[in-house]
Amino acid sequence: GQTIGILGGGQLGRMMALAGRAMGYRFVVLDPAPDSPAAQVADAQVEADYSDVKAARQLAKEADIITYEFENVDAQVASILSDEAYMPQGSHLLFITQHRIREKQTMEKAGVPVAKWRAVFTFNDLKTVFQESGQRGILKTTRGGYDGKGQWRIVPESRLEDIWNECQPYLRVHGQDEAGPLIYEWLVPFVREISVIVTRGVQGEQSLFPVIENHHQNGILYMSIVPARIPEEAVRLAQQAAVKIADQLQLVGTLAVEMFLTESGEVLVNELAPRPHNSGHLTIEACATSQFEQHIRAICGLPLAENRLLTPAVMVNVLGQHLHPLLEQIDRLPRNVKLHLYGKREPKVHRKMGHLTCLGDIDTALQFIGSSKIWATDSER
Ligand code: ATP
Ligand code: MG
Ligand code: MG
Image 1: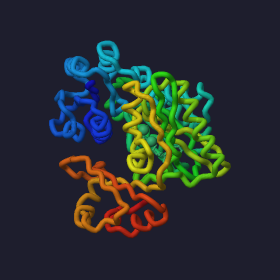
Image 2: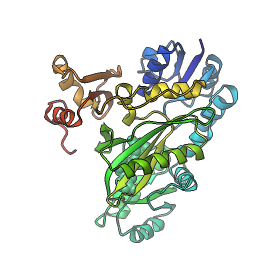
Image 3: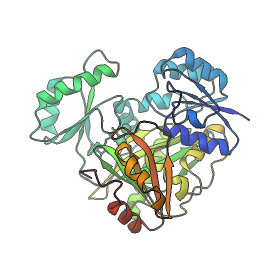
């Protein structure tokens, strides 16, 4: 059998390996933690930092096919992996999705609508765009942000000096000596957040997963619902945008496209994730083929499988603070609830420990989630 190397040992890598092992592939994982979620289910591990060049060479040597489970792959490591091994997704996809401005420009080139935005290099830029945008927007670091980290919501009352000071350390953490650029986006008054997960094979064939509806809490994905409860025209626009982006990027593998649906029925693309996505975890049970299996098929050059929706479903994340109440009632979960835990030892607050997928009627699932003690301690939803 062939060996697939995964850069990164988190839950996405774990679920990729679980799907791929069922098809007979071997897995080797590069991650600094000896007991990472993916390493627990892999055949072998290269225990090293993600930016360790020697370790990347070793992964390249041990694997026939390379993939990654996060987008912030060090540029030098990405070039080693694509030169010295077979990384069908290529390093261009990483180059684009690692940087919010390059990503926005790619989406515009694909002819897909996005929120109005400006690059911000200086404090003066920020003051100007603050006025231009009607004093409402979101300032984001161009690199390294996730779960709402590295972004600042701007409202008319915002003190721009304080925000400017707060974002400086983030810029340096992510490997830039000079300030900027940041990206300032006009605030989109959305009525729904949705995602489209698309897989594209080496021959350019595409498969789309049904549109998923997403709900966030404290900047972190809280719950996803399939099928998204949106008008048919919005489904069409969302899928069309995903197809255009996948073609523009000459995608190989699975890509998640996060979008906003506005009151007037417009669909704007927010951001891309060049990999399986948290909102797609419900495809494991709700679709004929999961996002993880489809990703493995794409990078291995297998035909993409039929992935139609089998049942409505609601996925809810189990964060660190939810783990204890979950374990207390684990023997009393409804029979339509599927349990996934990632094997992480320390249940830190807001750390993704696992997820539950409730199959069947959406309103019944929402009622279970709303009345359950598991998520009761979360203040704002
Ligand atoms: P992820 O964890 O999905 O990678 P992230 O930290 O990269 O998230 P974004 O997806 O860009 O950040 O933003 C996080 C959330 O903030 C969005 O899901 C949305 O709720 C809100 N948001 C981001 N940009 C905008 C915008 N321009 N207008 C309105 N809301 C926005
Ligand atoms: Mg993101
Ligand atoms: Mg996002």
